[in-house]
Image (tube, rainbow, N blue to C red; front, side):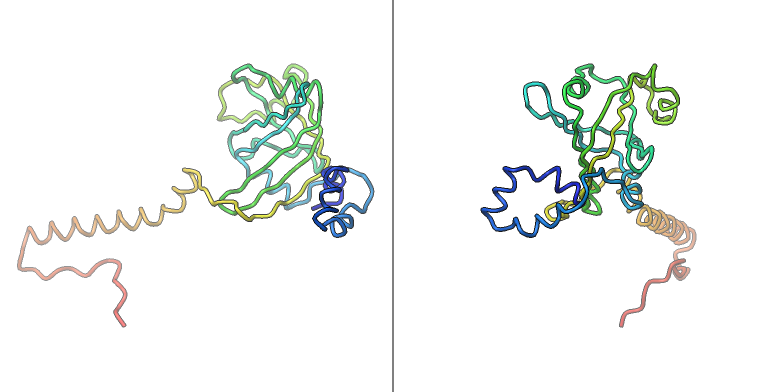
Amino acid sequence: MTHRYAQVAFTDAVRRHQETHRSRSSYARMEQGPPEPDRLGPGELEFVAGRDSFYLASTGETGWPYVQHRGGPRGFLQALDPGTLAFADYRGNRQYITTGNLDHDDRVSLLLMDYPMQARLKIYGRARAVDASEAGDLVARLHPQEVRVPTERVIVIAVEAFDWNCRQHILPRYSVEEVNEAVAPLRLRLEQLEQENAALRARLEADPLLPPAPPSHPLPQER
């Protein structure tokens, strides 16, 4: 946890609970440092570039939080620089809840997950919505080629703080792409065995008295 993340997250009410449960002394040391926004390092930037989804929380005028799942091709959330994230907000169901919330309160929280690696990155930031007509080259930079619906606006997030969260209780989950990649060698081996089996059947049907041909991939010897 960065000291800036602790400064933002540890409110007076949070500190009182830490005092009650005797964790305040260690967390107090985490808060020490200038109140300057964090900058994402190489590890954080690489992690962001590898995501194909994230969760975005904002707060409405009633005080109720709103959490939205945002998804797209891998890398659709981009770092414009170590202190700025952005993504294309393309046309959806036209509820505009997050967009309206940002008019009221620009503070947001992001949760980026890597389920196979059991990793999560939490980010505090201040977000603004920029209409596509005013975003200039950002639209071309951020709009994924695979997405056919138009970009209505660009969401730009100034990073305030980040924290790598504990991996405990993150259950590994895999996308279809990741599963296909993992089983590709097994599928290739299965195809080879099926081809060998077909060749052996054809050979035996042609001459049942012939001895079986050795497999192209010898089996390991028993010990």
